[in-house]
Image (cartoon, rainbow, N blue to C red):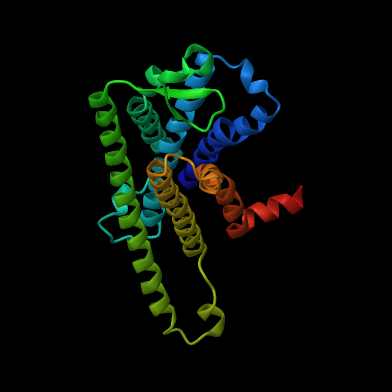
Length: 263
């Protein structure tokens, strides 16, 4: 297995966690089965959804870096960072799990089920019909918020550097191909360039849903969550990347289509 394949599998796994903990849970609530969930269930669902969100941005960032290093020239100073096999990626994925689990470790202490709270103690609905955040220590809460923002800023910065480097390599390759006289070579895109373009699209897809979710969240906070249309849009944006990115990858990668027709 190649390192990029392992990263795509891990990204698909984190997207599945997001869909199960956010999207499917809302569907189950229609059938009132969510009422059977107690405080422990609320803690597990919301904690997993937050960890999956961090894993998504971490994995997407690492995927962008690995692809940028892979298509870089052999004489590039970044070439030493190329993983020799998928086994070299596993320690980084384990580190991502530990990092995101620690950054979200404060959540279980403030999540309660509605049955264990008085209405006067409810501070904010978390879009789960029976799970609520209970106000806690403000200093500790801001410490974890700063850590989460710092994590997102670092990974998005790395993602931006790797994507910019890939755009530079793609443009340089295109300029070199223009000098070729053979028309067959002129319009032939190497597989590594197609893979790089796919990773760039995945990254742009993630950034779109990430920042759109942030802006809608700020709007709902300022409006106290009274806008029903914005609430519905926010629920879609939280799971939008997990829904759209697999179809984007299938559309860009001909190997998936080949396997489908072979089956």
